[in-house]
Image (cartoon, rainbow, N blue to C red; front, side, top):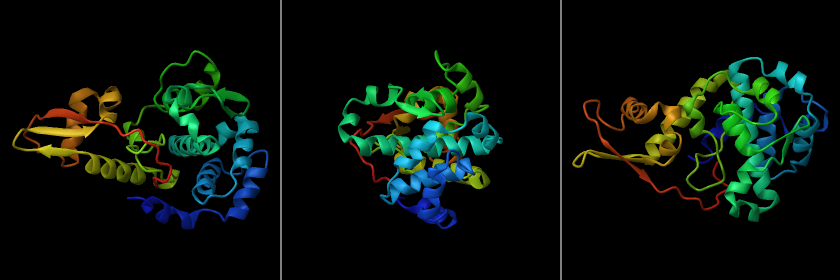
Length: 247
C-alpha cells in the first residue's frame, strides 16, 4: 500500500522549485495544490518551514474563497492535517510520547488563528463544537461528516491509514480507494464463530459511521462479511508505535 497514492498523483504536482515559490508567497495561488506540495516537501525530505510560515500568515478571506466547493475544503484539510502532523513529529520526535498533549495543544497557526491538530480533525472535519475561535470553525468546517476521513488521516502511529495526497477533482475516487484499502487490510471475518475483528477506529468513531449498525453495513458493502449475517464485533488493539514513513 505504501507509495501507491504517491505514485498516482506525484506526476501532477509542481516541481519542488515551484513548491518553494508557492510557500514563499504570502498566499498560495491554489490552496489545495499548496497543501499537496507541503506534504510532498515532507515526503521527499525537503525543507518545509516556508510552507508552515505561509499557513501562519495566510489570508483567511482569500483561503475561504479558494475552498469554495466541499471537495476543495475536504482535500485541503486532509492534506494540511497530515502535513502538520508529519512536520510536528519531525520537529521533535519526543513530543509524540505525550499523545494527548501532542494533538490537543493549540500550537498550529493558520492565518493568525491558533488551533490544535484535534481542532482540525474534530472541529473542522467532524463538526464537533469548539469553545474558542468559533468564527474560524464556522467558516472552514465541512458541511457534513464523511466518515471516510478516518481512512485518510494519519496521526503518526503504526496502525494509522497511510498518508496520501487528496485532490478535489478525484476526491470521491480517492476516498473510496482509501476506505476499501484500509478496511480490507485491517478486518478479518471468522465464519465459524461469526465474529469480525476490525480496527479500533470503528469503536472510537462509531457515531460517525452510524453506530454498530452502520459499521456492519459498511463491512457488508465492502464484502468483508456476508449480507445475511449479523456478526459479533471485536476490535484489534491499535498500535501506537511511531511510523512516519507510512506512505
